[in-house]
Image (cartoon, rainbow, N blue to C red; front, side, top):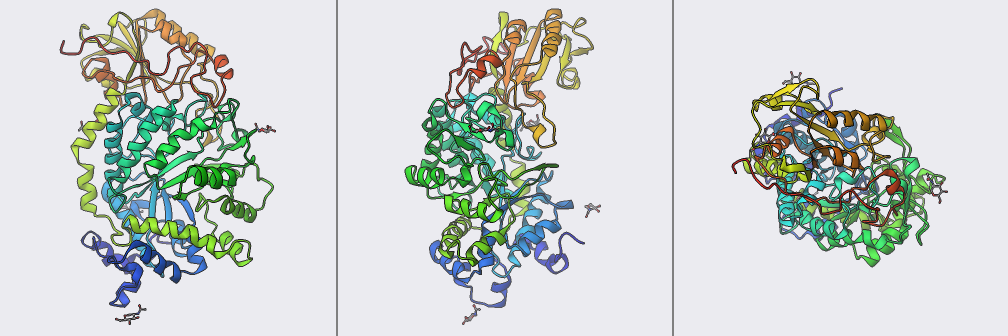
Length: 618
Ligand SMILES: *[C@@H]1O[C@H](CO)[C@@H](O)[C@H](O)[C@H]1NC(C)=O
Ligand SMILES: *[C@@H]1O[C@H](CO)[C@@H](O)[C@H](O)[C@H]1NC(C)=O
Ligand SMILES: *[C@@H]1O[C@H](CO)[C@@H](O)[C@H](O)[C@H]1NC(C)=O
Ligand SMILES: *[C@@H]1O[C@H](CO)[C@@H](O)[C@H](O)[C@H]1NC(C)=O
């Protein structure tokens, strides 16, 4: 079965896509010269939403309330499953998980998908969302950075530079690149705090300090939205309310063993500080996390099911009136990157699917993430459990977002523009420069770094990257530490490997290297002066390395070229640690999950970062 069913019929429209910009074609418009009000760009948004809403069937409304991950078919085609969700389930919110290595194909994929939606009865446009795809580094669970997007250090690297204007510029560039291929909803930024250093999702946060996170979240959102939220914006969905940091013992709540979130320091308010900044900056959407709070005043059910958290705290106390999108897969278990995960229905495991859906609506959420079950909403309305007014309340918000984003007036992207944007050199130059600046120099014995006065060729022993990077700079790479003049190790911060294709991507558990690995490294440090790059996602407990290596650089997402530019002084490290580095697993176990900066005798404190005393030219 051809993935793009109506290919022949739509061939002409697709060929014309790039010249159709600004024209809203669709079945209704083409059959009648006068546009229905919702298609009329001269009317106000509220009037258009009202007009559309009153035309919609219950099935069409229910379809709006679901958002699911999709990938693209071969050569940027719409695969059969995605096509069915659009044609039959009438879904219009899709989260793009794929990685299309070419801007032409990516733009064409978006336009094919949009055409598919235009062919439905009302032609309600697709909103395509995405996890962050501009960042390098370990610890990301979203799609990899696209080859033609500028590639930045991870969020922790941006936090290390503590520069709100740079964050605004970064988000503005990510916005322009993303919308050029039709990605209009950002499932980020992450306002969570790394108060529990073992949590697996610290890489996408701005670190441990609520004040630092708040100061960067706001310009990030403003950069995604631009001055005025509209046709050039990417909508921000800030996550994961009310702050996913304080997971009990750091286990992640994607998994049954990590469902509990805990506040032994009675410090929930601290975790709300970045969310308050996000709301003030106008975040359009907020996503509550999977976890359930234990031993608090709130019901012990996942945050998406939690009326006290969503309605009373988020909407009531914090005054948020945007869209609440649940985290993905609260009702239905299913496949995650090749691994079966049960529904993340923490605390409501005993409820039926229908009861779970009702509880999520009652909590105050507007849209079900990671679900393709409009029949549940239809049944809840038909059996009188949920009044249609409650459905209209959420659908109205979801439709309004599409009108504000300009999707009704300009559903297609221009392939030529996607190619043009992918080639804007300034974006790549700034991203590359930021990778280098975000390096954080932890130790530098006898100012060994930068290596500006080494005899070339120097004989290097290396680990963690390819010899060609050094060889192309005129240095030799040898097989053992004993033969070398210097060692350069590119290490990843330690974690306990887990089974399961999806679970294995979560770096959880111990922050220490195993005793075997510590001994293996110690032999190298003893044999030859060694420079270590620690590629951080979570913090690591590495006092031995700090003691035994001649220099330690921390990085938060950088290419090999960036590393070597910093090592050889073509760029200098400017970062400061975005979190404390604890001394040991034992020290971490004594911490309170929800309290920042409470690790005893840290190896380095938040804010530590040395500078070079000379550069390549001095
Ligand atoms: C089509 O257009 C005519 C006027 O040109 C209008 O009277 C009629 O209501 C329209 N029909 C629909 C279905 O919008
Ligand atoms: C994808 O495009 C290439 C090059 O045009 C073509 O050879 C190939 O058959 C296409 N694959 C599919 C599945 O359509
Ligand atoms: C979560 O906390 C509850 C209540 O304290 C406890 O009974 C349960 O064992 C905990 N679950 C996990 C997976 O740790
Ligand atoms: C940025 O870095 C990449 C990879 O390191 C390189 O291929 C590219 O040419 C650089 N771009 C600019 C504009 O410096």
